[in-house]
Amino acid sequence: MSELSDTEEKNDIRIKVSGDHLTFKERLKQHWQLLTKILELVICIICLGFIMEPAKKGDMAKIHLDHFCVIFTTFIGYLVISAVFLFARIIGDKIPYKTVFIFSVTASCLFFISGILLAIDRKRRYFYDDTFYEPRMYILNFIVVSTFFSFLACVVFVVESVYIWKLGEEF
Image: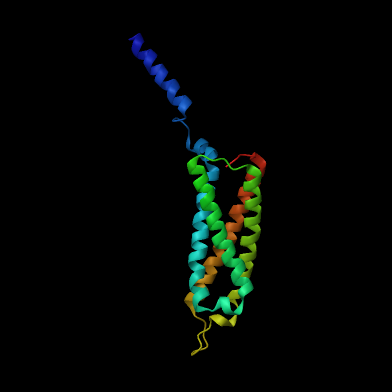
């Protein structure tokens, strides 16, 4: 009987040391940066997906190349940066917290600027149908969705940068 209790105690110690008995809140605290990067990657994909149709049908690139360049550079650039950060985490590489903080602050600024540019571009006349002089509503809805997710990404990056600076954890 005593042998069984000794092995059970050893198993309990191993489980507690390995971290299998962590609560959901503790696991969330442990992996918050990973979850945030996945959320940022998904938001970048959504923003890029919803801006493609207005860019093609509304001739954004021909009329406002400066808006087009900032918006697409932000969406594609931070899609790649988030993917690289996630890949670095998968292979076990550590990224210093100051570097991640700088990327997060820059991303929040660029997504805010992109959201403003998309809000301005929504009111432009180049999304109107040439034959009926009415707006193409589905294109305007795509711009609204992309604008919303751009501002949401700005908020996510701001919150992430605050926590990175406060906690000082490497990614």
